[in-house]
Length: 263
Image (cartoon, rainbow, N blue to C red; front, side):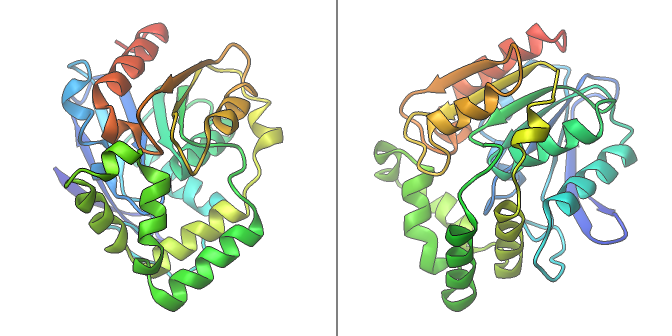
């Protein structure tokens, strides 16, 4: 069911599926997508989970405050939503910018998170110059001007030949320019190497072998910051392996949930 939560700064669209007393799994999606990113894996997860998803500020059906945004602000948005939902001891699955939110929230609120899945993400993604260029391009030519290049980074060559690519391209270009640029600025300003290396909790890294946004070596380097973490490479997938290989993604995630006693 679609719901809205007002943090005082932004109105967040979110949805909760599953029983009220189930173990909580929180999913945070990538830049340029909304909570539907996780639809392909939802039916493949164990029954009985309480699943929380939301559209970060400037995305999907959430409101679009003026930018630029900070990573601290995105983390606080999530923290307020999860406090509102009385979430504790969740497993937090974050993809790309969602994985940065996962890292920051785990450092800030260890009471809230018992395990993290860092999917197609890193402690630092890109550099200021790259993000400045992207923000300028979006503000000048709209997201459409970047869309083909984003599709190449997001998806394997095999998937890009399929008609459903258009669904994800449309999702990207229909996001708010201010939201996309605002979240790009938040990524640009983030370097979590030091703070993430202090984490001591169960951690799983996942990446697609054709990820053009956060290549496998980058994701592995970040995952290795957390002692005793696991790492899984998904073949024939790009930046969004939950879309391209949902069965394998769900299988690996379920194994992690079992490892931390969540199912």
